[in-house]
Amino acid sequence: MSIEIRENIVRDKAFKFSIRIIRLYQYLVKEKKEYLLTKQIVRSGTSIGANIEEALGGVSRKDFSHKLSIAYKEARETEYWLKLLFETDFINKKMYESIYNDCNELSKILFSILKKTKNY
Image 1 (cartoon, rainbow, N blue to C red):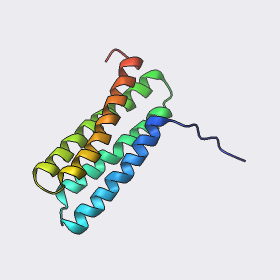
Image 2 (cartoon, rainbow, N blue to C red):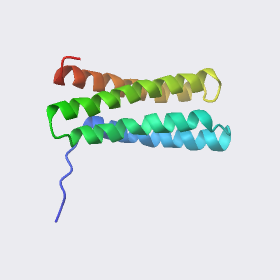
Image 3 (cartoon, rainbow, N blue to C red):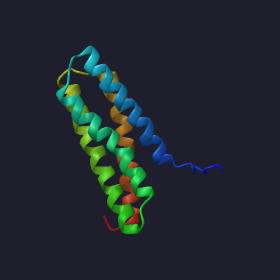
């Protein structure tokens, strides 16, 4: 028996972003000995993809929109933690810009989908 997995760009981007967040977490703990902010960013950064996955399995349009709005809020929160890590010198400008741009792109995609699925 084979299971068909449909391609979904936002799901794929969020999954790859989660991997980047986990690698950032590993770097911050190992190299910078930072534990407080890393717990926050790993929670919000990986939650984006988890909520997208839940939205895709939603049982109604309302359920879909609700989970997607949570994913959007988690993306915005992750942007905040990234800014804070940069401004407190835990990550350099190149690292910040790269991962922040990915997060911001996810935020924009999610917001665009939300606007199309409900009056946001």
